[in-house]
Amino acid sequence: MSKGICAVIPAAGRGTRLGLNVPKLLAPIDPETTIWSILRGKLLPNVDRIHLVVAPQWAGMFQALLASDPQSARLSFSVQAEPRGMGDAIFGAAKYWGDAKTLLVVWGDQIHISADTLKRALAGHRGECARHCTIPAVLMDRPYVQYCFDASGGLTEIRETREGAKCDAIGFSDVGTFALEVDGLDRAWQAYQLEGKAGACTGEVNFLPFLPYLARDGWSISRVAVNDPVEARGVNSMDDLQFFQQIYRGGKNAPSVAAR
Image 1 (tube, rainbow, N blue to C red):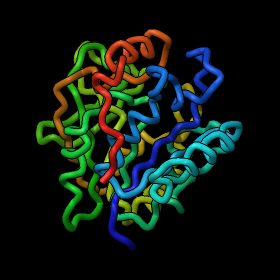
Image 2: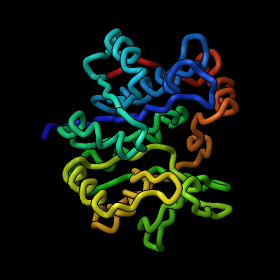
Image 3: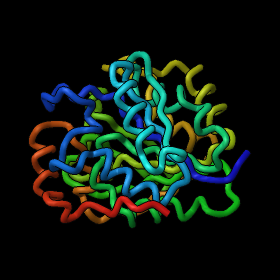
């Protein structure tokens, strides 16, 4: 297995709630900037490769976009034929990240993940480690997804509002970013799928419930504290898009796109 970190961005979202005629990942922040260009600029200094998982209708667009990128050798994409959930998107692309040491999963609309959070999430994966997952988490009001930890910091449960679970008034939420060691990961996913625990509302065998499964299976789960709740905010509505357009207007808060 080669050394290195591969970031995977599940980005098959159609952006229909945003009223766009482009994939959500290419939603405009200003005339020169998109969600993708901002994420690219944050990720390339911290990882060796980035792999995108896109919807079939956008394959040609991403093929041209990545081929023209000056860092094209470090970029790739594959297609998720049907929208079967994030877990399917990530593990359906396993052949693209299976030779890495560490997998970094970043949701395709998580525009405000900070460089500091990325570095701290990956810090625990730099040395020799196995069966290890790191989850950056922020304490916030009314989390849409809540992470529950025991007294020793162990992950016990993830409650998803979209699956009918009830979250507490205050609780830990993720920031759409997860670092996992690759060795044994795909085998664990295949074993998890055999349990057939689909979401109560969506019917998907998805990624987030897989994380408590890893904890029960003996994986060490580390929590990295994030202080800014805005890092947990994705681009899921026009209000979200306009919010980040204000923050990043004129490239004020956009990172440099220079890569190492």
